Amino acid sequence: MKRVVICLTIILIFTLTLFSSIRLAKANYFKALRYYKKGNYSQSIVHLNSVLKNRVINRYVTLKVKTFLMLGKNYNLLGDYRNAEYYLFQVFKNTPINKYYKEALLEIGQTYILSKRYKRAIQVYEYVARKFLDKEFLSESYYLKGEVLMLMRKFRSAAKMYIKVLNN
Image (tube, rainbow, N blue to C red):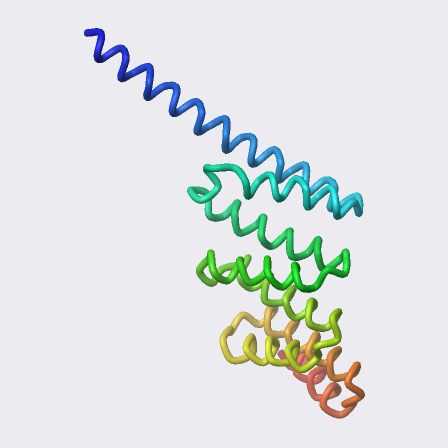
């Protein structure tokens, strides 16, 4: 009887620890979102890093992927494109193709634009055009590719991309 009580106690403690850890990770994630929306990207990064340090995060892939995506966005807005690229690539490594994967693709394209690596941005948008059929996603990719082409002063090619947006 004592062994059963001890086993149940251990299971209960383990369960409570697990749930409190994930609650803490989620609370840090939502704090990070609040700071992000206020434009305090550095403080947002602090809370997002706390999420990643939580030992149960690997069991919650969606939260982990959303955290990587938000870190990439924060670093983009701070002008730290190397870290932005690193965290956005973590999204690709940790998730199947889903809405976060697609959002990370567009964000990595933005990273390349902001860091003036226009050819890499075009490669991202061409990959999107080859890989995905979602019309809204394709339209956004065509539009952004047109923007890059404008920055590269390739106006005719940019116009063709904008026509694709209209026809899509």
